[in-house]
Length: 184
Image (cartoon, rainbow, N blue to C red):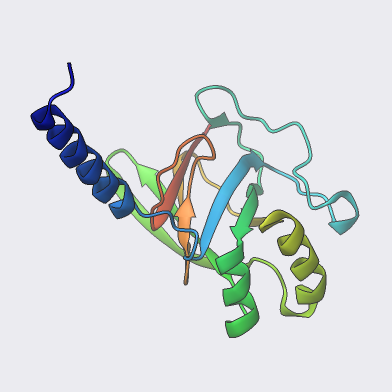
């Protein structure tokens, strides 16, 4: 039997749950760049083949890569509608690849802080159509390290004016993503 007290408790629980859910950020109104794919490779194609990494990727399940310079970190990213609006307003949407070398527990910054453009201002009409139809646009980009040495390498990815989603299978939004590889 439903009593007034049980209905009151149910109403309080529903109000509490709705307040909790409304406090969870959706990021729909914030610029977010999602990293859909990434690959370590030693060669990247040209614009004709969509700037894809060229196999073999020389990566095994431990992230090891034989010594064969150069070393590229290739990415396919997705920018949401708010990120596209930022591109239109400010004229740029930039990711940064910061390369670090690891020797044991010591981390050495290589001074490589590489800006990578996501989208281009001169392409806003084309990108506008894509964003209107899908709510996002995809872009491919990469950075390269030519003088690769043995040891562990890390690339920290950050966006100048956007949040990042490092794993398309998870909902976590962050300010930086980390990618590791061991060079033999």
